[in-house]
Structure formats: structure tokens, C-alpha cells
Amino acid sequence: MKKLSLLLISFLFIALAVNAQEFNYIGVKKCSMCHKTEKQGSQLSIWEKSKHANAYKVLQSAEADKIAADLGHTTKAAETEACLKCHATGYNVPEARLEKGFNIADGVQCETCHGAGKDYSPMKVMKDKQASIDAGLIVWADEAAIEAQCRTCHNEESPTYKEFNFAESYKLIEHNIPKE
Image 1 (cartoon, rainbow, N blue to C red):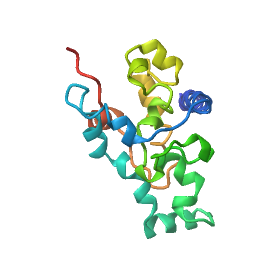
Image 2: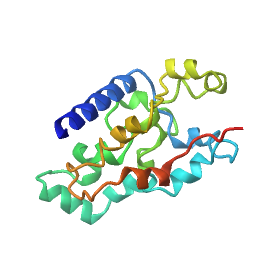
Image 3: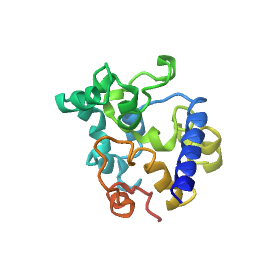
């Protein structure tokens, strides 16, 4: 069962990486222009209150640098790919794919889970779900797929891993658009 879970997680991670290679990142500040209102589900405030918003800042601590060094890394945690893969969005893409205003220091941003957003962020595209998907928006099929995505970081590979209860954790970050 564990091998199957790891295989599913690997497949989803690869699928995300392939999708992300085609599009540019705009960053949470641009996403928040539309996704901050109550009508839109207050996604920005939910993210701001989450640990995801501060994930990169965690890497800038002496404690994080010590953990990285203890693991044999020769760079500071905020410069170490093994740390960045779960603490930052856009850390591993060419600078040309990071639009003006994108800031890695914003941590685990919208585009970590929803895909690089430059092409799907215009309002005329966002109003058409299939056009959004065609332009790079990742839409998760169900909570099992969302959980698999979460577990690409929330797993035993993390040197600070604590038991991950998806159901409880998801309640803290769930941010659907309310049905009218």
C-alpha cells in the first residue's frame, strides 16, 4: 500500500512539474487581486493565515540552516533545493518564467497547487473553466487527489515531519468559491 501511495504521489508530482514547465508564474499578489473577496471565498485571507504563507521565512532561520547542515547540505536552507521544494513556489524555474512582482519569499503560494497562472489569470479565461485548464490551471478531481498533492511535502522525507492528518489540515486551508 505504501508503495502504491508513493507511486501515486510521484505521478502527481511529475504531472505538476510537466504542467508547470509550460507557463509563467505571477505570484500570490496578482492572484489576490481577484481572490480576496468573500464572494470569491476569501482565499487570500485563508492563505495569509496558513503556515504556507510563511514557509519560506522558516528557511531563513538559524534552526533551518542547522537542519540543512546536519543533513549534509553545504548551502543555507533558503538556498537548498531539498528544502525549497516544499517551502517555496517557483524556486526551480528559469527567472524568465517568473513575472514581475513574483516573490519566492511569499512561500507556498497559490501556484504551487493550482499551476503557474499567467495564462489562466485573465478574467476572460477564468470565466471559462475549460479555457482555464487549457491555460494551465490545475483542477483536482477529488479530495484523494488533493491529499496526494499535499503529501508530496507532508511526508516522512521532511526532517521535521510530524504526523500529517489530511482531514484536519485541509479544513484549515480549504478555499472553495461559495455556491450562489
